[in-house]
Amino acid sequence: MLKQFLFFIFCTIPFIVAGQIVTNELPSDIVQQNVPGEGRIIIHEEEGISFLLDTHIGMNKSHSYVDGYRIQLYSGSGQKAKHEAMNVKSELLELFPDEPVYMSFTAPFWVVRVGNYRNKYEALGLLNKLRKDFPNSYIVKDGNIKMDDL
Image 1 (cartoon, helix red, strand yellow):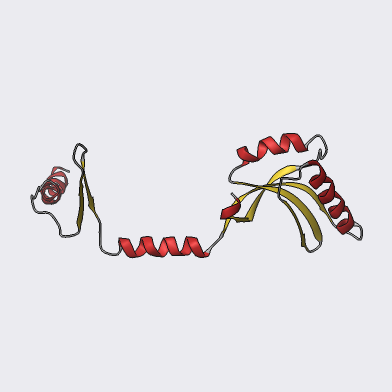
Image 2: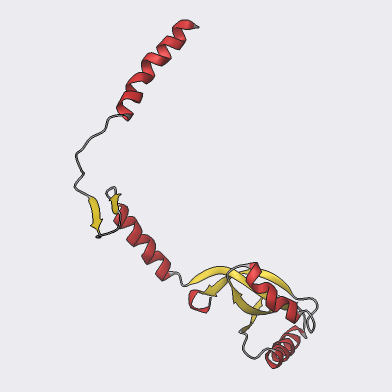
């Protein structure tokens, strides 16, 4: 047991010592910003980080839809579902003309939703107002919300 412990200590000492080496040399990729009266910021950036950040920004710009929340007022199927969905939409627009309303069909359901929210908490205010006229309304996660609408 003692031999194993000494072997472990002997193997880890070079790593501990190497981790404590301090050098005064500055790498060529250090970004420095000196502002009089303020602190000094030094950023050590590995190669490829700028490329990854540019790729990430480009992907975000190309995907204009994000996950968010809406309030679902109606979901139905059948012969009268489209007509009922249109009635719910028109009633909602009369009560809340400034709120964006979305009516969609995903076989076999007609769905009416309202609002564009980043989280459930933001949607609660409108949900409480809607419950008076639409008691079965509830908050749903929706992945088709444009960034500009949030």
